[in-house]
Image (cartoon, rainbow over all chains, first blue to last red; front, side, top):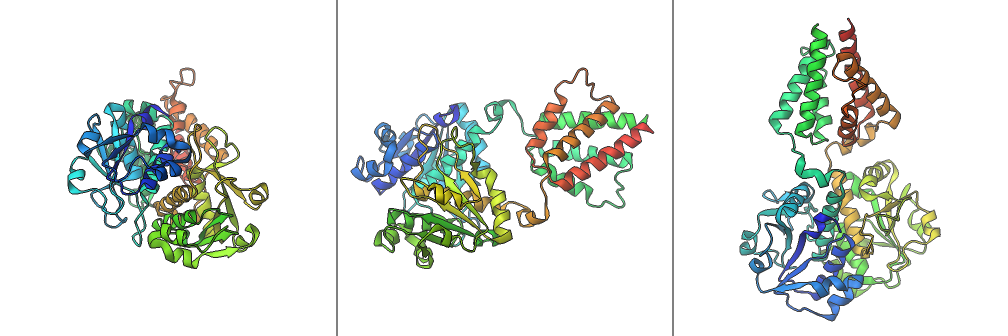
Amino acid sequence: MTEQTARIAIVLARPSHPGNIGAAARAMKTMGFADLRLVAPRRFPHPEADALASGAVDVLERARVYPSLAEALGDVSLAVGFSARSRELSHAAVALREAAPRIHEGALAAGAALVFGNETFGLTNEELGRCQMLCSIPASPEYASLNLAAAVQVACYELSLAASMPGSAKARDRQAATVEDIEALFAHWEDTMVESGFHDPAEPKRLMERMRRLFARTRLEREEVRFLRGMLAAYEARMKR
Amino acid sequence: MTEQTARIAIVLARPSHPGNIGAAARAMKTMGFADLRLVAPRRFPHPEADALASGAVDVLERARVYPSLAEALGDVSLAVGFSARSRELSHAAVALREAAPRIHEGALAAGAALVFGNETFGLTNEELGRCQMLCSIPASPEYASLNLAAAVQVACYELSLAASMPGSAKARDRQAATVEDIEALFAHWEDTMVESGFHDPAEPKRLMERMRRLFARTRLEREEVRFLRGMLAAYEARMKR
């Protein structure tokens, strides 16, 4: 369990089937999560939950049961509601992979929770109102209905990978570059390419498009933009000499 | 279903529990996969499989049953065996996220299959011998035992996202840069930074380390390395003039 996974609770709101609670506990443990919270489960504890938890019965034994979602989220600053919508329909929700670094930031700052609704009805509007972020697992528009424990498995997988990414422990110290920073970098870069004769703006050959595509994949940090612009300024000074 | 997901089969080798077959079918369909192949299932068809498939009974109905893995892989060029090992132990296996683009390449070229072993025993050595790649889902060293359908869910999720990545449809036309290409790029870049006076090799200030960290995140393509080196050559020529 990393510092981050220890600070993320999994909350199941009004689960109907004890088997799903057990399977969710197993899914959590395989990815290093341990804090399971149940809001008004229909049946719990239950032998079927134990059976499906397999080697994760300890997670069930330590699970806490609450009468309402508000009480389950008492010590949590960032509650993330999961909605099962198809790729086309979920506009308001942030896709899981995109949300993962933000969830970790929240977890490190003051604890986070992933909130999953009832198997049939999902999260109610009142429950969604308790969440600060809405997250979706991209699914097929033809059939987007993940099993509850399967959704917990995918969410925990994604967050466990995001926690183990190189440098994520230092994520707090690193600031992502803003769109403004990045546009200024591209403008500066284009100038130096023109200055060097490599790039003729009258015949662009899609050079800048290529640069954009390349750097779109990196998520540049502020510090990196500063560094690259320092380098470009040195080239420029030397070329103009 | 994308062109890629249509060309990836999910193969369950000797599954013991019909419920797992149904849950795997559901997991597949939520991520846009449809080709399910069963090797010597203990019980199939079975009402429990239908119950757990939920809205994915059509995947079960179209599933094909084979007496051996070799026969199930008859029309497949890239078979990927999944092993459930903890993060620490799986050296030979490629982590799922890293494997995903390679699996798509194989799928587009001549069809691929993801092969999952029996719930208790995993894949036998003989079955592993039929696979061209070994893949693992990174899991907790304390408890790495994902349920069979949960493993199928995570694998299909990762491959479905990789298929929808911008530009992945053109993946066939794009060649990843080799380590050699990239080292030559760094050497060239370092030369131009020295030439410009930005970089003093006697006092390196970790400049090259930063460049490496930045570009390690992009997975440079061969074409991009060529383009960047062309740019550096133009800077160099202009600086030396």
